[in-house]
Amino acid sequence: MFSRLFYYLVFLFICIGGIKLYLLWLENYNLLHPEVVEAQATGYVEEQPLNGVLIWDEQVIYTPVNGVLTYATPSPHRVAKGEAMAAIDGRAIRAGVPGYFYPALDGLEEHWVYSRLWPEVEPLPAFAPAVPLENGAHLKKGAPLGKLVPQPQTLRCIAYLDRTPFIEQSIVQNSVIRIKTEALGKDREAEVLTYEFRGQKVKVYLALPFFAPGALKTRAFSCRVVAGNTQGVMVPDTAVITRDGKQGVFLVQGSVTRYTEVEGFPADEKNFFITKGALPGNRLIRHADKNKEGVIRLW
Image (cartoon, rainbow, N blue to C red):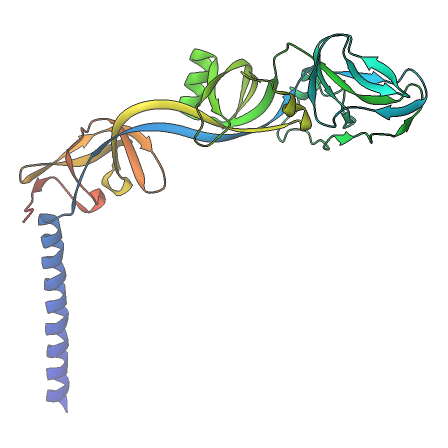
């Protein structure tokens, strides 16, 4: 009985020893035969969404007499000075200045102004959609019949953005940000009238490079902000490790790996964009945390 137990123990020790030897061999093999990737030349353009509120100067138009309201179209549209915007019992209500007329109201007219909105903290104030006045409605004297937005004027926007190095550089150094309203559209410059950093966010007051009548349908505004246009190389994020607070990679030079420091930033969840320290075509160890400097075999 004792001899059988002894043989079992010896067999167990031999198995454990064999497994340890195999793991040591496998670790050494992986060190000598690491997976290698090639740094790919690419450009990096940062994009982030902008969701803000629009600001414009507007005048509420009131009916001078009792009567039935009629107008040509319920959509915002351009009117010239002296042109009829609407009529009350056939009496024309004419524009005092050129602008956009919109026979709709949301109750925020003449109150939705920069001096009120800028001091607000995130989130931005809520608002209701504009409600068109019914064509043919009977209005009493002094009742509002729509709003006139004088033209020309600059359409403005207040919004919060993520505070990234590219965004901060664009705002502070250039006083502009690039925006695009369509995914495949061309980006255009919006002037930064003022800004305020708030932790990881930056609040901006923008002058937009367009103002079409359709903008009056909602006080909300959405677009994409484009920042940065940097050239560098893209590598898997596993190829980058941190040593003494600095980032680096293992470059493969012949049959030797050499650690070198790099500069860059995470491009997404799986990739790292290197701006300095690695060149297109450089071969790097894919899993840097499992490697060390020394001789390797790539065959």
